Amino acid sequence: MANNGRLFTNYPMWSDKYKHALVEVMQGNKVKPYPNDAMNSWKPGMSGKDKWVCVQAVYIDDSNTMWIVDPAAPMLKTVYQQSYKLVKINLATDSIERVYTLKGIKSDTSYINDVRVDSSCMGKIEQVVFSKLFFYIFAAVYSIKKASSIYEAFLLIKKPV
Image (tube, rainbow, N blue to C red; front, side, top):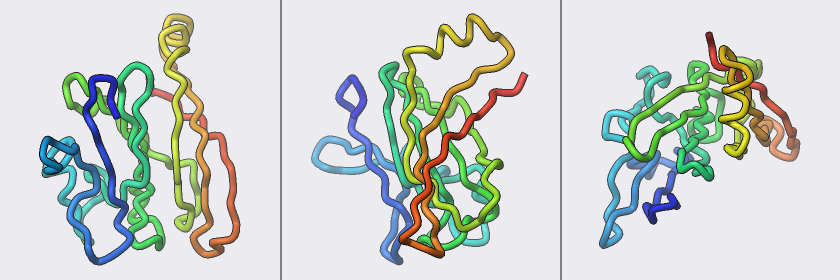
């Protein structure tokens, strides 16, 4: 839930009964695809780079920024066309500020599960290191082929110059 009371939820594509990946819950329990219909329109055969494929987690940090984990592995199978991503959305403008591709993950059977961002140090880092913004993401990476195996990974993602 955002700090102004807006409520969001996601639906991973784990079954044939699927309508939207990410929605905002509106008054009367109605839902609105978030941030828009186009982002929620992915179907097999389409590119998953600019659409939600299988949103797993939504996190809103202390600065009211939304972070979305899309492991892009529909039906808990392999990653679709290396479309896994972490997306940063500005909730004040409802606009996507940045898409972080997770190219460092080599296996198409890894499933990125969760994210937490420490927004308290973001401004300090930007002041000290102007060309590179670093933040650590704690991600639980699950092996899809071996569901009993759980891996923990710290991913370091760089903002390009």
